[in-house]
Length: 358
Ligand code: C5P
Image (cartoon, rainbow, N blue to C red):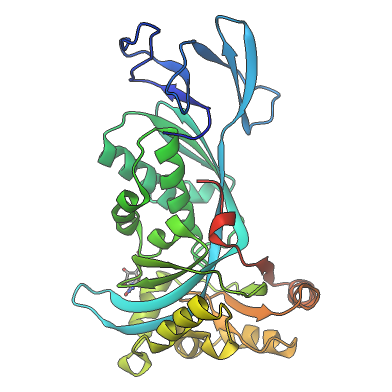
């Protein structure tokens, strides 16, 4: 049951009646909340001229209206503090051990109940049926059997196919938000297999913060927050078709490790809570430098500006470097952006509690 009252569009349901009986299916708006549905019919007032982040509902019996926010959530990007590849599996995937960390760079999604599932994106080329947001919405609908739809808005800030988990984070945010909007009330544990069907990184984003992942990435162990504060992310303009599978196919058994570094950092985070730089590792760092020679000019420029620990985000091509002060991080980000004309972001770490209310 939701903790606060919020508007819900119903096309099929159960409207509460003062006498306790359920009325026949009716289309319309109702308020759902801790005590169920209140015995008052409401209707939506058109939002023309209003902030689109709000829905105005009129209480029919009183003639009064009230503004409600649409469900608005942030979907954060991630960096990999470690990423070890343990070996190739029979199903074509690789077993990995990785510690992921959500960062302040985020996309923004809005959800409003309607008849059909539709996606409106500020980058229209991304609003295709294979967008992970739509896949998540349809999967939740098919799994739970709800007949509701949703108008979903997606504002992209996270660079696409860049190793930052943007699409996966959007998908996890969609599962969590629609589960609330549609009142399907699956637990996070029940959402996990759906998330794993969408992509290997999606389950992590159901938790956010700092987390260790196993298997092909779909098994998650939440960890205490890493104590890093600032990082600069540099996203090279390098287009790698089918980047993740291409990078995994480049990695050979020479680059396989046993997960020990990830285990050690997880233990360190659980005991002392710090993140010594020598624990940071990404098995794709060396592979990518060889497979994608253009990457070295980005790496070198980052290094020349004083960044010492530079690693790939996921399978790249984005690079990140932790920086101890905001002052220094800002300088690096601005120089990368303005001197080189590259896409660079200054980010802070985002812990589990600070990811959007779920
Ligand atoms: O799960 P996801 O769709 O993100 O994976 C994309 C591709 O990356 C997979 O088809 C597979 O080729 C490769 N991959 C892998 N091992 C993993 C994750 C992904 O080989 N742990």
